[in-house]
Picture (cartoon, rainbow, N blue to C red):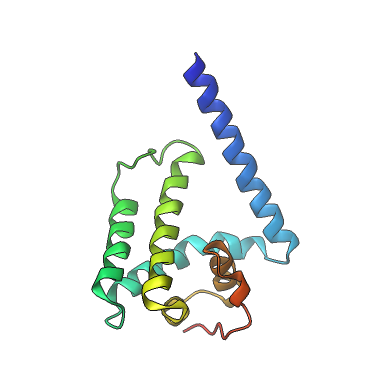
Length: 140
């Protein structure tokens, strides 16, 4: 019974955090449709980064791990668990992208981003690069 209460509490907390993050993004002027477009843009980014020959292999290895983790049906937290099931996927993606920035520079992310400039700004805030927004964020 204690496990069930703990799980329900964690699920409720994650739902609140995600709802608060969405509300905050919308209040900052981020259109809701841009937030919804972020997932496909992230998938494209990971594929493009994995194929970019200018990125060192040790950095691309993290991206391969993130792709493999996200396409396999069994994760640390199963994806069919509402909301919480996707949290581990997002954490692995952020881990890979932060490693890319450390190993290949922020330019690698910007160069390979195919989504909107607003989506790129949201992504850069998510991986802790919000302070570098003054730099060029053009997309292909």
